[in-house]
Length: 230
Ligand SMILES: C[S@@+](CC[C@H](N)C(=O)[O-])C[C@H]1O[C@@H](n2cnc3c(N)ncnc32)[C@H](O)[C@@H]1O
Image (tube, rainbow, N blue to C red; front, side, top):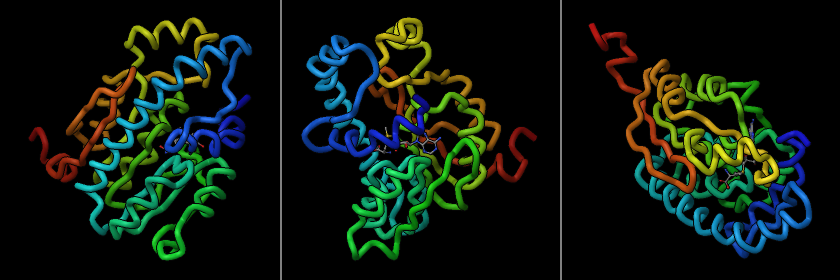
């Protein structure tokens, strides 16, 4: 099943993570799925709470007004929070079901402030915005260079997370695909930092999150003007 098909079927179930628990249809044998549901989903739910707190804290300090893009918006949860902070938001997702779910979830008083569009970040660039977030997206995207190339030139700060290719558990999951319930992609922090650097961004903050990292990156004005290093 392709990543897009997976999310077409599962974004509503995944959104349950923010409520009672995920209702996604996981990959693997019934025994593995039962094990995962009983022992690993509660752990994931705890990490989701931590992730949610990190994103809220970023939004609280960065999106007062201005423009924002929420790449892989899912249920629209973070688009709505950014719009509540007065931002003008583009909620973008490659899954039609996520686009529809986001439209359903936007409260009537915020519809003017949120534009919802179908967009595959591997095919198209985001519109020009001040702030871009992509939460839980890179774990499903193999090509981090194209992901960054389609975001960084059109914004000044970015928040996103990824799964660390060097993490022991991730190394294990990569080779024992039966341990991987969602078909994850893993990335090297060095490659991500280099690609961000190529667009004049520095990593401002990196916070450990489960087997990966939450990254805040910001465009460095000196690099943008070409004076950097002269
Ligand atoms: C784990 S969910 C996260 C949803 C939301 N950002 C959140 O944190 O609740 C991943 C989302 O990324 C979307 N996605 C995955 N690959 C994508 C791509 N190449 N372009 C755009 N959206 C993508 C999926 O459709 C799904 O809605």
